[in-house]
Image 1 (cartoon, one colour):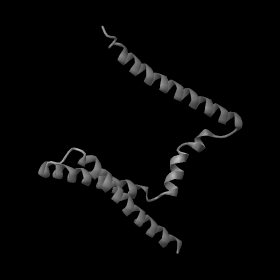
Image 2 (spheres, rainbow, N blue to C red):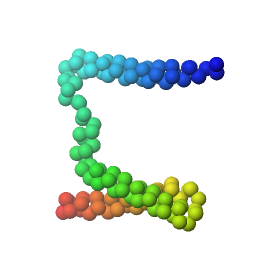
Image 3 (tube, one colour):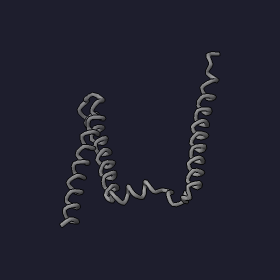
Image 4 (spheres, rainbow, N blue to C red):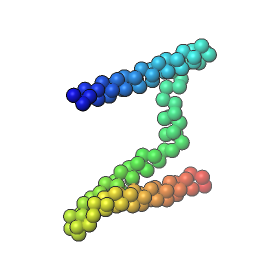
Length: 118
């Protein structure tokens, strides 16, 4: 008995504690809003709505990043298999291609912003 039985207890107990604190704080916040006369339903999903309104090209950014990181992983597998290079090629190629994707996104977004402004 090395105390292995404590691992699931702490795992589930910790998750339960986090959920209890989250819901308790949310309840207190809503009660304070009701006391002030504010409708809590007006604030539901507000931060995400504002974020998507400010950045409509965010799906383009994340799509480009995902595609290029995937292509970097495929390229790293090919290089690792055919040229017997170290395993570090995976991380480096995914970071380089992800950076290229973000640079491409920057140029697309800046061109779109210039079109909208003038």
